[in-house]
Length: 298
Image (cartoon, rainbow, N blue to C red; front, side):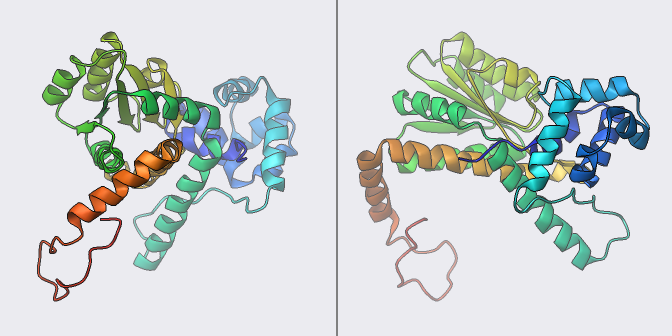
């Protein structure tokens, strides 16, 4: 079973930390094993913050005090494959460096999210989806792309599901949900107004609610039945939603596979039926291989 990683939790929460706590996090992530050996006084001095900031940081990371943080960091450092934090893309980086940083940052976001994902909460979300009469999915911007992916995946296994990125359509759908339905909201920040409005309407109508978000302290996380956390840090090019999108897609894939496994025979029958329905469709643009069968995952 994947164990929760403290360094994964810290990386995932970087965007939500106050400046002084972010300064402390940067020092810890640069050398987790070294930080684990420091006294609270030494760590505070190294990061140029107060000891009170260290204590607040511990609470933000979900541990009761600094000794517990040190133990968690030491455990992470001893784990195989432990890494230090990847630097942000700088203006002067050449393209090869940019490619390397993107690859490492994206891979780290996926790995950290896997370590952070609470299996019990994931199982609860899958239980709700397995019982659902229908599932409505809400997300805007880059999160809408992830929502559309979940919608088509659920449809492929015979589940009634629709993804909404337009607030008017989303609110309309949410107002018609009830206790036998599920609403899934996707938002990296957990504070996107349109997504919150759609989710709140669905909740008020009695639907079970699931959130995929990077911020455990966000309004969205506080208002749903099941919170599935990602651990993706976005900084210089945050508006491009690069690592966060991949982290969200990992969670979506886990939901989909878990649900398909839970309803194995029905899902297999639906996948075969949907594959047969599209296997002879030609590609949208001629590529010279129209006679070949479409891949089974199309």
